[in-house]
Length: 438
Image (cartoon, rainbow, N blue to C red; front, side, top):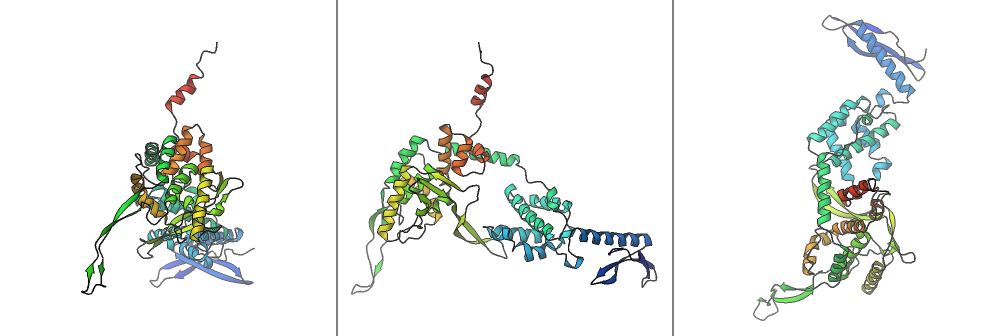
């Protein structure tokens, strides 16, 4: 008979109190030797026999399914630190704080110290319930579940468990609250975008930013014979764009409106991104803000901007209008005069060739539009992208075409946020079947 097997179903023992107990006993074969293994004690021989059989069946199952031995079984925490964090997929995660937050939550609910082989689907439902009780957003809950799912999938491959207990836990469905939010965003997009006529009118205003007067405070001087003396304050005229070249404000609006790019994609544009021969631009990089967390409090200590590769579903090559190419050439000439131009130089840089902080445009967005005399200012930089989509929708382009233009994975987001079904169109379609065909 192959080992492990029930060697002697149970063994009678006498406790220190004088009471008779039964201990489960089985045998395994290790390094060519047969070794006896003893389990827990029970009040009856029947219970001890059942425990011995259970242990033997468990060992046979592990051997059949290439699962690790009992002494090699790991807790969630041990496996996460040993294998999961160093796994190729986790190394590719851009925002490492998502992993940190997931780990800290696993510790908080006690999941960290449970053996992976002892996890059940029922535990996973309680885990999700704990997430919901914290009042977290649907997307955040799904992120936590995704991290645990990838850990368990890796654990199956490495023989720590025979199944992924997260398979029985469904993804978070869209709630009424999420649908209401989509409706709110759609209304915001529709009421805070420009028409095609307004685009050309306002771009002309942004092309020539006005000068503004700035008051220079009086400063003390020590070169006077009688000691410290204050120089008089005075007014000076400066560009509304401050230290940033005026043309880059025009560029931020023009590229956002004509190409419909995300803010991060715009900031990551380089001269090498543009193909002058085929008149296209390659969108495969994005500039994103990253959080630096305090390991103890998990609060954000600082932010940094890093260039990352966009998702494969969002990578695309777009046709570029002549107006955009003329602008890029103009910026290249300007940077060449500064001595900062090179093929892989970013489009949005200061006079020293340093990439602009994305927050600069966001922080001065409304101020610059107001100074230009724009009557209907766009609330935020992302509204240039929204405007691009709504203009195309108004011109009759399909949701699929607009989704490709925006770099959406599919047209669901496009349909929810930019194009909604019209009752009038529905009625017209229905009427087509009732028209008099005679």
